[in-house]
Image (cartoon, rainbow, N blue to C red; front, top):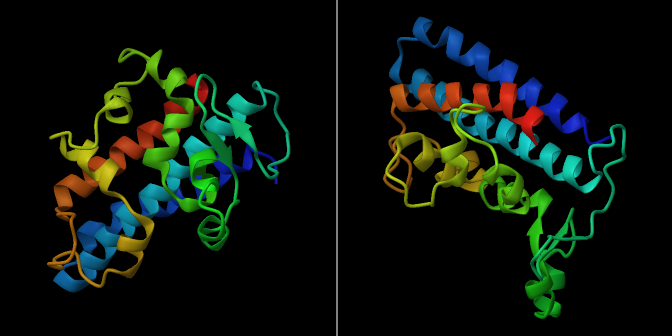
Length: 197
């Protein structure tokens, strides 16, 4: 796998999201519509993850294409934090607690909203005329914007195992209008952001 494959994976998920969104109006059963919205939101997170991981590797390889995705051990510029692909595992961290302070970012954790911090210096120089949604990437987790809230609340495990968007356990309010707006934000992110990183 080369790092550009992250964009191919993002596109694959984006196309599925487009299909779900385009066919949502044909579904009238509440439970089915609920499931579609939940899956649309879930897959949107993977689109964002693909774009961000692409940006991380593009930065790491200094824009050289066709570089292999390999175990990444990289110190984030101007910090003492390190990025890794899939190391250390949780059991390795437990066995050696000092690893925690070194390996702050782990790409396989599906935490795009955290991993974006690796390329925050690049995100900070993008202005609204280049990408109208850049503020969502730069906003704090407690932002009142609906899209920013959905951006920060996406969590692979929470969403993967939810059985209903109306679950009282869910920290996320699944509203059709909000999820569609989030999808539009994700679509624009895929279209614009990779070219700016």
